[in-house]
Every structure is written in structure tokens, then in C-alpha cells.
Image (cartoon, rainbow, N blue to C red; front, side, top):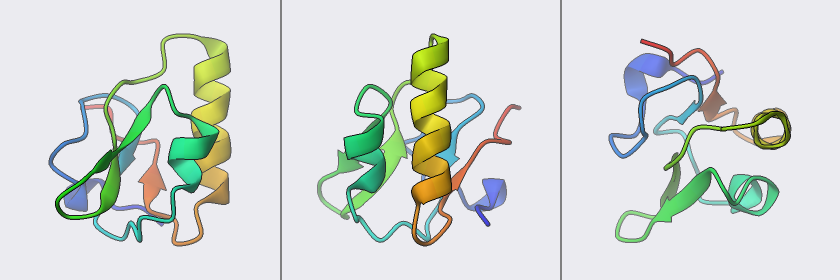
Length: 78
């Protein structure tokens, strides 16, 4: 389960986030490319844009449910 206290620092504020458990598998970036991107130097994903419509939100949920290490969370609202 993702830990909002361990979020990758590049995540934009909002509901979805990726924590340090990310193994750079690319699943989230393929599933929700409008919302997830890669930190090139360290090799992990983060949320660069929160979903702006229902389709993007559904893609983020699909990415979260498919994440093999459960590094995506949806309780990041501050």
C-alpha cells in the first residue's frame, strides 16, 4: 500500500501520488500517460498532472490497481 508520507518529491499536489516503492515498470505511464511521467535521473514515476476529467481519473485508478508494488496512492489530498 502506498504511503503518502513517503511520496516522491516531484508529485504535484492532489489526490494521486507515487511513493518511493516505485520500481520504474512503466505500467502507470502507459495506462495514464496524461498524468504519470518518469524521473529520468533516478528512474521512477511520479504524478505530474492530477486528473482533470473522469477518463483521466479512471486511468489513474486503473494504474493504481495494476501497480505491481502498490506504489500509487489516492489519498494524497492535503
